[in-house]
Image (cartoon, rainbow, N blue to C red):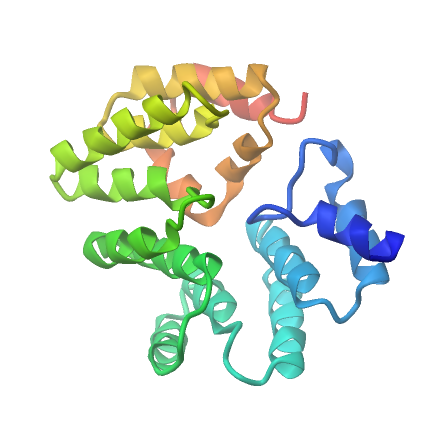
Length: 238
């Protein structure tokens, strides 16, 4: 593999494109990778997600347009789905969802994003359904969100079972404190959630930056007036 292609692959190993090495220059890292791989759908997709996080929706739409042009088989419609939902374009989001349902989904990212769309719109049952489908062994990003959806729909036993599962995983591998913070938000245990957010910040866990992601904003909304939470947010890049 050429060095430039290897660099781009390393940069884009997680869902929103952050790595612990990017620090304050994540936009430059995206732009560099996009320069090296202008027609790489993985690079385009992560840059689209990044711009969605910082609410640069026009850039997200432009990047998604290019992905669809490169792959005219509806493989990237899920980006439009969240984009329209975030902008309050419910009719367009609904039309896009109908198109997605006519296609065959092929990887965990699609299931994760569709689950996030349903969580964003308050449909906890469908959110749980798609988060379940996104979990395939190595990829567990949907697991804490699944627990959150379970907890908020009243299935507390299932949510606590996932919490126990994450605790067991943490004995043999690194599990992000951010994941635990999400689960505890679902269980309305705000003190434990804050403690795990603090731990994520202390460990410089890059996933803490997901707190600016569309779904995470909704999840942590009850903490907006909490001084400790505000301190974490204000020190996010420190």
